[in-house]
Length: 228
Length: 228
DNA sequence: TTGCTCCTCACGTCACGTGAGGTGGC
DNA sequence: TTGCTCCTCACGTCACGTGAGGTGGC
Image (cartoon, rainbow over all chains, first blue to last red; front, top):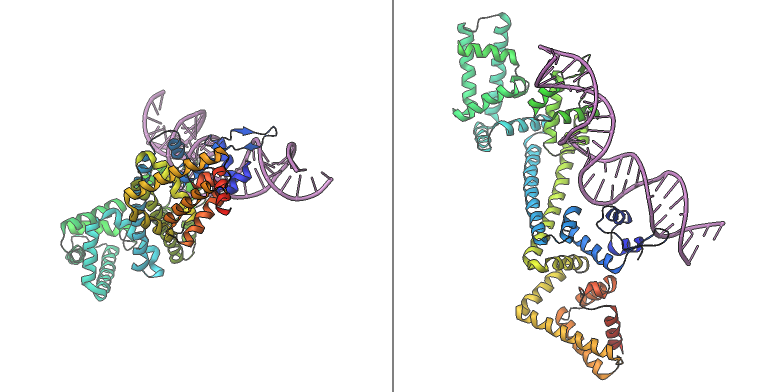
């Protein structure tokens, strides 16, 4: 049996058969004087076993091991375990994809993806559930109001900072109080969430953690105000 | 920001960052006179977008497309569709693996894998269900009895063939009748199953189709007996 | 002599990991 | 001067696909 015929009979490509020869997985038992590969009956039988094992998703190394006398049962079980791992991973990824696709409008999608990635790094799944609950409780109107509150507060802070007002000044202290209140609204008073939020600002930096809403200088100014 | 620092901050490896530079995905906006890569704030921001998109399982080409102004929503949706396809494939494979693992004893596992592979090529899923039902109906004892029947019949056929008995001889004709009966038991009289069985013997050859139980010569002898 | 089959290199794939060998910076 | 960080090649990974350039076999 020559290589083309065997390829047709087995559904493999000629190149694949040559590859198996190269790596020693299936070496034809004969060659013609011109170098043509000649496959004998036992070679054909071996190829069909190879095809069957490949059909289980085994690597060529595992196929070789299985044919080489290794415990086939163990090889297949390992493959099953690896596949289960892979499927679980795939399902988690699917979750993420679906979450960003229906959680964000198309034009803010990139932003939502980045936020999700950062949140996944800093909040536990439980904490993310808490945050989602709190957002749901606020409702659309509540969220929009909170965003307005933040924007107004930040404007005011920046104005004082630009004017050079001392952080201990009563006017700035009043802004600090509003700041605390908004954070309190975000965390719902949960100490764990508060810690995670702080840790995120610490490790990611104010600019990324706030998604561009504030920078390091504003943050420093407010820290001094809240400590003073 | 130098490359090591950025690697630590982003969780990527230095090599990966160099790779992104090589392929033009993230080219640092500066180099020191000694050739050190210097990443500016916008480079850092771009890297974090890259990391976020990679976290969705996008290829670097898709990441580049998404950052290059392509419709992120469409890119992510395509990724989701591809992942679903992949998951379905994985589940089918898992099915196969589980099927051979609990359908066969360890020492006949290799054989079961080959049989399953061949059956999957020649019987439709419905037909395989039918066969499974018929096996279940026969029970362990029935299956063992059928195997004994086949073994005895084959011994008898080989004996007549070796003795040079003409296929039209009444003794051989009686064997042919038993042969038909056993096949009838296997197919349950279903014409579709019978056709698939014949097609399998046709394309795979008697030796492989019967898993070594009979060879081309016995098969030819019986064909003549049944036609005669 | 003309198609068809076969042969042997050898590069390309994807996203880096892993040295090798060398140099800037504090 | 000594560590530490950085640099540029360049091979290896996995299972082949895809030419290029050439030669048997009927």
